[in-house]
Length: 253
Figure 1 (cartoon, helix red, strand yellow):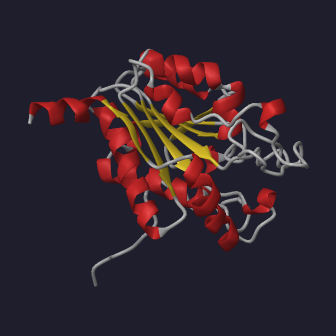
Figure 2 (tube, one colour; figure 1 turned 90 degrees about the horizontal axis):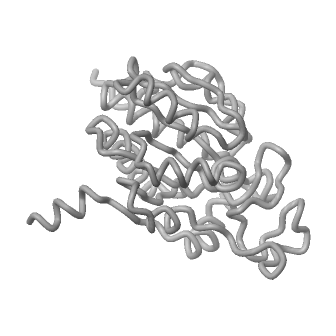
Figure 3 (tube, rainbow, N blue to C red; figure 1 turned 180 degrees about the vertical axis):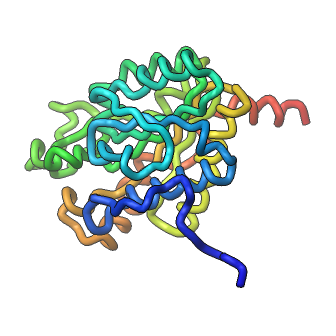
């Protein structure tokens, strides 16, 4: 009988520690499926963040390194420059990448470092108890914004893809989501492209994955996915924000 579905080889057998309904498991699988489909498991080195995915090194069946909070792109840069034939990726949350790690993210993109960044945006600090993140929406209630995010006091949420797309450096910047089957399939294709770009030595690729945090949002998993659709996606529109090679190919035709 033909196998139609199985666990990716690039994932270990370890049980995930994430909360019920957390989409991190889906995103892990998409990354692992990309690694499998490209046949790069033995060449891949991942960089784990500080955040909910801090123990990603237990889940991916490739070499992994733990970075200091926000410093995953800098760590990945060092690895890639020392081992240019390796495929290096980071897996980061919004508190890690868009707050304490914003400088590392922007400058890695500006230099077009040949790495792949998987950025999970769930609009909150998950691991530390649900504090307001740089991506928390206007009016969003969190532990540190109990009356809702006040943009006159805390500023506006940062749209990372739009910000990085203004730079000359990065090769590929795209925003996807995992709140529906259709969006999960599209996310998988974008993540695979981000790894393929690195194999082809095209440079920096970042995939922002709009996700949910049912526990810290105080919602059921189903309600959280609905909130992604109704509240997050209008502020964080899905799409490709920069694709240098794609633009050149389009111009050539």
